[in-house]
Amino acid sequence: MILKKFLWNNSLFGKSLAVVFIFYSSYRTLFSKFESTFLCL
Image (cartoon, rainbow, N blue to C red; front, side):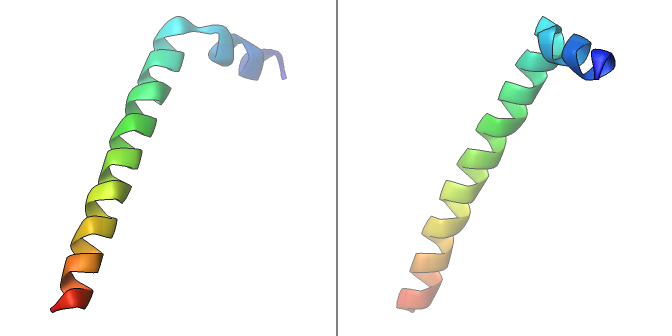
């Protein structure tokens, strides 16, 4: 519990988590666009 709180409060961990989330969301958007294009074919 304390370790989790420490990791959550760590700014570097928060930044890396945010970067991963941004990459994941952009990947999901790209994949959905590709999927819709593929379904239109």
